[in-house]
Length: 158
Image (cartoon, rainbow, N blue to C red):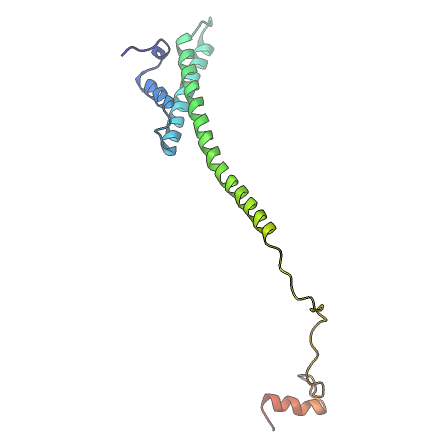
């Protein structure tokens, strides 16, 4: 198997990760997230290495191999991240679409069925009903005619 010019910059493990990033349909969400983490870790390691070499070098020179490796890993990270976002957006979109369909069905149902019409002879509420027997004293009255009613209700005659 011939290695392409671009992939010469990658080691075996990185080559496998980049190859996995090109075929994302077979991966589930957990595998996709794991691949994304591993690719980011490799890319960040190469990026730190490039910065360290540049900082320590007395005369800056081209570091094409590491930069090419970083570019390939960055492309793979972008592919995986785009797939993660696409799957997340698809999952988010489906409840919204379902809610829209439910709302349209409710509007349709409401337009087909008229609202409830109650009897037209009902009047407004006038407040609480009057006490049915106004001749007895209110509960708790301990004077005059109320005393007899209270004793009769509580324990009977004394």
